[in-house]
Length: 117
Image (cartoon, rainbow, N blue to C red; front, side, top):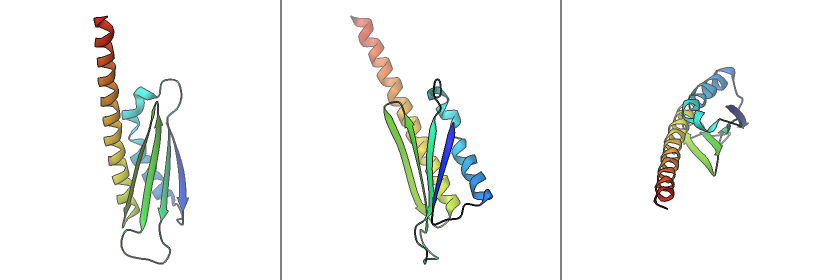
């Protein structure tokens, strides 16, 4: 699994970089099934949405995962970059689980239909 990081209006520190790789990298256990032939690439963007505000939802995090037949996307704005990253990770985890469930259901339905013929 490869994580591409893009920043906008924000200096990425080694601490933020490590935190992002730790949190987003923990999704690897959910993506092992899809990482057979080619590598799964997660594109992330972290940004500071405004240069002059100091309060409110100033930080933004976004992540995209390309899977067979589907692109999973999550985004979140918050007052702290770490909170935004945590929420993006949680949303992606839910999307991955939903995608896996749909794939399993369609596979079971297809097997039943093939078995009846």
